[in-house]
Length: 123
Image (tube, rainbow, N blue to C red; front, top):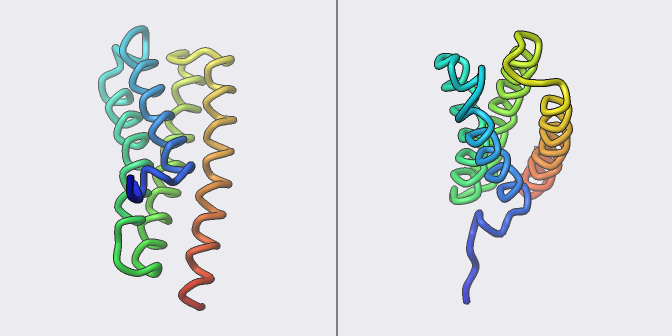
């Protein structure tokens, strides 16, 4: 079987898994009833994996890196939104802590991917 493209990226796999988890967590409970925040959280989570995929499929590393930075920005949005969810009582502290740890790891992985792809096309 040939190359799977972006699906081979461990960072994409983790981002996709996080988006699935966010969708599952936001189906019920207080977060599920806050339609605006729920929608924003879901969009941010999906955007991370989507931009990693789109970047990896671009023709040049310079183009790819631009999308990886967008993914990193979406991750920052998600981290902000889950913190707001926790502080407003929509998400319990234990769930928040677990999601924050996943986000922190994902951020480091995206940063490594950006550095690796940036080196291949120069300053």
